[in-house]
Image (cartoon, rainbow, N blue to C red; front, side, top):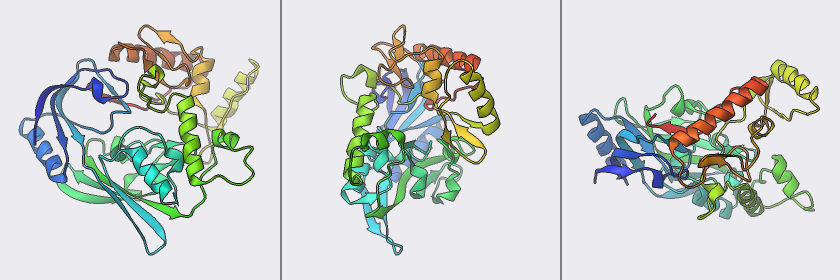
Length: 349
């Protein structure tokens, strides 16, 4: 396997910022993944596993170890004895291509996750979700390389420890596993998910329930309107997607904050979360804290179409992105007492 040196990482990310990798390799098989890991260990190098680069912020100094891009391709499906259809895809497969395949096969469960950039291997890490669906709802198992033993294992859904926008892969077992493939159990002939407000509004005038294909098309259209669909030449799409997670707060805090907000003539939007908790829209908090769509801070800014997307206006550095992130977090904390948590993975900081 070819190991390259001083490889620019910015072009491999959707934000387009950051310095080089000291070493870089692309593995196209499980054996090459192990080979790359052994290379890093033999030189005592830190290891970072790169997927589609859609949820990353790379430091301006780059990464001083080995960046391993998992490029293992392939996907297949079969019907289980319980009549679910099990779709299995290798980590390097393009995510939206897989979603398209499931919709074409008339299998429900991933249609609302259409248009999300990146690869299959990245989806379990942060329990990717959008428009009322999360991958954890359909993941049956995840095939991984355990870096503690250098053995290949299969983890069940329960063993992945999924929570809102998180899993063991980015919390308790961060840096322990390299994801090799993921299996999803989908419902053949199942009804599409239209739980999210944007989708319900989109289909409000539709007499009959939408098909899976219609929901997929609607999600991609809504994402495009919000610059959350990667379109070449679209400045507002030069982002890492939503930069902040929607905060989940205790009911008591929500009620207290809601009262304070109402005293200012505003209504605090929220959504049900776990028992005793409410989910607040981070985009609303950002805008009410004074950051309108299109806000600019030097060469970085906020998308003109989505308040949660921090964008690279052309020649931003990672430091520019961090400065804007810090400003947003500080003002939201001051205004609402909520510390917004970033969604992207920070590399090299």
